[in-house]
Amino acid sequence: MNIAVIGAGITGVTTTYFLTKRGYKVDLIESRRYPAMATSYANGGQLSASNSEAWNSWSNAIYGIKSLFYSNSSVIINPKPSVNKIMWLTSFIAAIKNKNKITQQICRMAIESIKLYEQIANKEKINFDLYNKGILHFYFNKKQTEHALEVNKLYDLAGLRRTRLTHDELYSIEGSLTGRQFDSIFYTESDKSGDIHKFCNSLVKQLISENKVKLINKEVTDLKKELKIYDKLILCAGVGSKKLARTIGDFLNIYPIKGYSITVNNPGENAPRVSLLDDSKKIVCSRLGEKRLRVAGLAELNGYNLDIIQSRIRPLIAWCNTMFPDIDTKDIKPWAGLRPMTPNMLPIFRKSKEDRVWYNTGHGHLGWTLSAFTAKHLVDSLITE
Image (cartoon, rainbow, N blue to C red; front, side, top):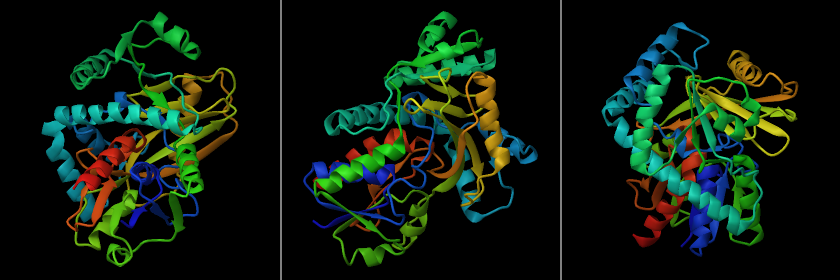
């Protein structure tokens, strides 16, 4: 069978990997010169089942409306209407009633996906700055803590252990936070962090060297044209998936949710080593090797705009300086990417209306976390159909 995977981000690379494990040779098609140069370039770095809570809630919907009047909000919605945005937001609100079910579903997928990444890392011996130090969540007031405890009940049902810590336990796990006071702290030991860009490029390089994968640099504009060449296509094109699905008469309700990150180079000895999540600011922080710290977050509904806006970078730097005043933030590299997000937060990994085309897309802010799971299950389904 002649198979092509379209898109060499994390979903495309993991899909390609699991296809090769089933004995297939794969054409991996990417419009850019190298893998992982778009959304998989500089994300938050976390492999986090503990970040599985669905965004669908009335409080988030109201916060989004309020953000229309505040330029420094962690969520920004461009008020200019579009059909795509209205359809997505309407579906987002409709999914609120299913939030708890969705959260558990995402969490179960994330748990299995992280195990798969561990297996890949051990088997393939690739270096992507994998840290097995867990993730710390911290909350600043009683209301946030009460919400965190409710989310913990959902995580328990899904099989995830997220433990509440004392401050002394926090300081023993992450010394850079010694002396800091929070209303509550939670720790998920099974979560990890790693460099998504290094993972993708290292794995593709290895598969090419084993003559299992051919990396083809070209821009795909019409799936029907590619079907004249290939027996099967797997679409892993992130925010570009929606436009390509239209060429076979299919509809994917995906909207590009813009996020930002900064990479702090040479942050010094006082930088944290355990990954962190500030739920109130929607900011995550991950250590990538000895010489880099990644801080990422924020959400914008502003179409396909990829401009790096300094007023959105400044809150990430300010958070870093406030949380860790003793680290060196002189050398900072900013970045912006578009998360391909479905309105119910669930990724799309299934056959399309065209029998020879499959989808693995729509992972949103959890693309790094969930892609191994969706890739393996898609390949299993494709092989056994």
